Image (spheres, rainbow, N blue to C red):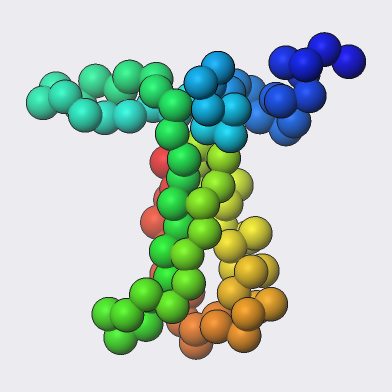
Length: 89
């Protein structure tokens, strides 16, 4: 197996300077034109305006990070009573 294939794992891309980062579309200019840049997907859980849990993922969309994030909260016994999430895009 080639070194690059091993680094890919289950992702579509990786950064040559940060093998853990995945290329994601970042909206940073005034026209909201997305540019591909190496990045991470941060998930945060809150309760009463306090951060109760967080995790960093290589998945570019929230739709692939929500279930693993909820499972982490269940393991840490910090899952709240209500779960609110957006569409994840």
